[in-house]
Length: 364
Image (cartoon, rainbow, N blue to C red; front, side):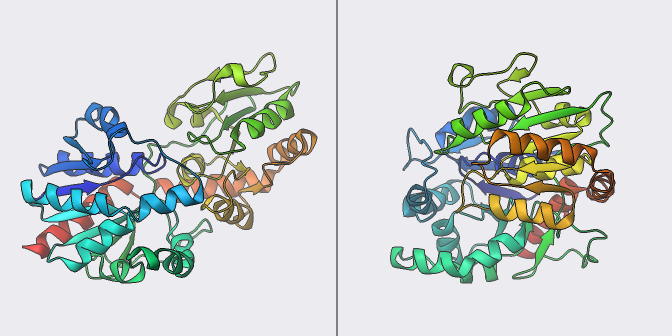
């Protein structure tokens, strides 16, 4: 039995990969603890995972603006909390969210084996590391070095949206090894009984979230389709005008919604996008935050021919035409179905658990 500590933050899209991988390790008999923000406690405890809140960040509320995210990623208090947790619960491997740069930096300076958990496409993070490094250097945090010394970098994604995927190397937990595990959602091939569009934007209240929701709802008004909208906790139904005939939910699990979907319209978040594609469903993205991975995810979808992307400020009539066009596009649907087959063939949780077990074995 090995001992693992997952260090995470309340980032929405990182919850599913963290919980799924941690539970896969628990099922194999390993001892797993989670350290994160107090706002995450109920979700992780409901998943049966022992959870400790950061002592330095009580009452956490995410500030999704770039300055707020930068403060979070370079928060040395979270690094101190991690060191304190390891003093109480020594771990064979610490699995750290890729965005907690201060934690990565401290562990890189310690004699402590750690792995990095990435919850978006690796190329997106790698291409932005130089710019991010220049931003956080004045905060006394390094970017590139901790990533090079991670053993390994676990990517809860696929190696691109084009198929066939590049051949995967044998699993390894060596410094700097990048291991793509696949999607962390349960998925089946979608088989909608009737044309169905699922609308699912961010769980965070980005500055234009409400306005984007309204444009999207106006776009589907009157369409002869089944439309399901999951507003999420960041928007209440009273803040938007909902056309008649639209099914509205605060939240529903992807694995309940997407098997019935013909098209998913989202904000380009990695988790929602990959979950839709894992079900073989085309995606239309309206990225909400230009400094995040959302625009790049949207462009990757468009390049792969499994959907389209457009500005969050697009007029409803144009969004409506894009929805109709994507639904009617046979080649897009076929490419999405084939990509879904390839994604489902990867055992995401199992591959992640395998490589983390290799990392723990190497640490002993």
